[in-house]
Structure formats: C-alpha cells, structure tokens
Length: 448
Image (cartoon, rainbow, N blue to C red; front, side, top):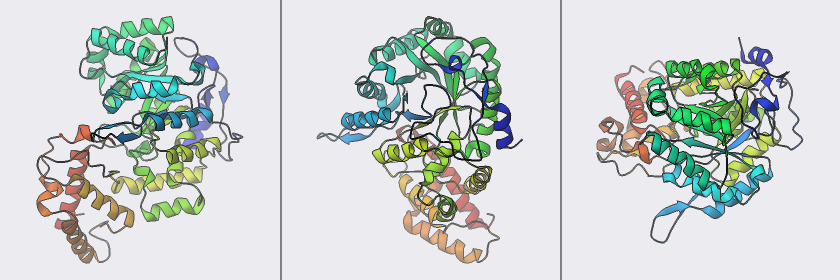
C-alpha cells in the first residue's frame, strides 16, 4: 500500500475529545474521518496548519536555544533572543513547546518557562519529560515531575513524556518496577497531566512492546523520529518511520515528530539532489521539503523543530502558514533522494568544536567537514565500477590526507564515546567515524 492509499484509508481522527489539551482523559474516542487532499494545495489562509484542533502542526523544540558567551568565557542561553523567538512563534500560531529537565545542561526548562510565562497560559501547550536516566527511583522521578510544574508556574502539564524509551526492559526498569507509572496515571486522572505519552529510539521489538501496553496505559500520543530518510532507511537502533507511523495511526494515537531534518542532514543535500528540488520549488528552502513531508500525514499532531535562529523560524512559518501537501510525484522524488542519501549520508556536523579535544588526537570536525564537503560538492567516490575509478580514488585519498593529518584520521578512533555527550547535534560520533573509516578503507582496497 503506497502513502496516498494509506492516507485515504486512515484519514484523521480529528475529534476535539481525542486530543484536546484542556481536559484529562483516558483512551481517545474515534471520530469522523477527515481527509487532507493530497492532489492540491491545502489553503490555510495564512493561519497555522492544524490536524488536531487547537494544536499548531509546527512545534517548537527547545533543545537548541541560542547561546551567548559571557565575559568570563562561559556560555549561557541568550534569554533575550529566546523571548523574541517565542513571541514570534506564538504570534503566528505555534503553541506546542517541547523541552526536558536535561536539555542544555538542565537550563532549557528555566529559559523556556521564562519566555512562555510572559504570555497567557492559554496561549501555549507545555510538553516536557520524565528524563530519569541517571536516577529512576520513585522519589527522584516524582521530584523531577514536580520541579517541572514549579519551573513553569503551572498547575498542569499538557503533554508529559516518558523520555527516550530504548527497549521493553528499559521501560520496565525506569517506570514500572519503580511504581512511577501508577503515580503518573493518577496524575493524569486528576488533570495535572493532560496527555501522557513517550518518546522512543528503539528497534522494532521495543516499539511493539510499548504498543502491546496501549490497552493498559492508553497512550495519548507518541513521539517518534520521522523524516523522509528514516521513512524506509532508518539506521542504528531506530525503526523505519513508516512502520512506526502506520502502527500508531492504526491505533488512532496522535504522532509527534522529532528530527524532521535528521539532525540537519536533510537541509544540506548535495548539489545534484538539491537541484532536483529547486527545479520544482525554486523559491523554497531545501528544509521546507522535509517539513512538507511531515505535514502531509494526517496522523501527525505536530512536527518539532529546534529553531535556534530567526531565519529558521521564518522559513518554517512560511512552510506551515502556506502549506502545500506533497503530491505523489513529489513523495516519490523524496524517496529517490532518500535512497541516495542512505548510501552516502551527510554527518551534519556544524564544526562547533564541542567534541574537542579528542583524548586520542583525532580531528573529529576536520574529518566530518572533509567528508560532508565531498558529498555536497559531489567529488566523493561512488563505486569501484564508476568511470575513471583509479583516478578518482587517488584524488580522493590525496585530498583526505591533505585535509586531515594521517595520525588524526578516523581509523585511530577507539570508540571511547567521550565526545558524544558534548555534541549539541547529538551525532553518534564514534559510529560516524567508523562509517567514514570503512568507506575510506573500501576506496583503498577497491571494494566499494
């Protein structure tokens, strides 16, 4: 079944009772099907697109607020810029704000609360998380939950997430064995938690186990990694988004999307792929295609974007205020691009240097910068069967040695993982270094 047939059959469960942010509830009740037309632009008349009443389809991810350097050299959140971004977002119909007690070294909730509390509580929906990774005890989990309420000076949390479920065992250890699930269910019953769900980075068995628990816990929403690359080309511990979305839609569970740009990679396609999109929408950004993909699915409640800068917000508002669902032909084109991207994906490193210095002397940003540039410039080696492979091979390896000293190249990484926690883009650095090293070695051996 292709995407167009799937959307036609499933439609949207659009009843206010199913997803309303203003009242506690148990399981959502089915409602009349509403279909988003897929063969013509959806007229929003300059208003924020909504699939579910009262929730803007563009959500604000608060993990990457703008920073500023103080006189002592330390970096802190630039509250003035945060306030301006929040003001502009709310003014244009963005009302879903997603944060966590652990984002930005624990300071995201404070900064987000300071910006949001300058507006009436009815203007914004709070989504935050039980991020009890370090200490999953009942006492600490309750403390974390109540601290979020105090920070936002509110008597309820609109969308509360069990943060980053990794497996069935992870859920059981952090939430069931500790008894915290009983507490959260009781809080939902009182209305202090309006909607209870979870975010997940898991292989399929872990996700399936959480779906099996739906009759018991009645998940009100689920946050998944979904974009046109992960649709059928999810890597690492993630499950293909097509499977996740279809399973959630079949159960009428609203979907919140994280990583719509795949860590920024879908905003930086190589020249050939970018030209294909520009030929269709010359005045639109490459990023807008990724958000149109997310917005074209009727079961998506909102797609989160970590809009650090005003230009990010401006571009996304343009996409969602004047939204055009993908046609089937455009969806097919994105699938073709995803096939190419899955073979040679960009790392998406911004060169911030937070991962440095590497204790083993590896030039992490230099390696990523070289690799990504060759992909964007299309000077990379595609296959040992390509025309003039020998010459392309020599040129690529010589350029690599020139860009990165031999003793600082990817083959020296021992996967200690010390760099990973410092990356604001959440790049799995050892895995990416291993992938690039395997690619380089295949070029050397002529086995690509």
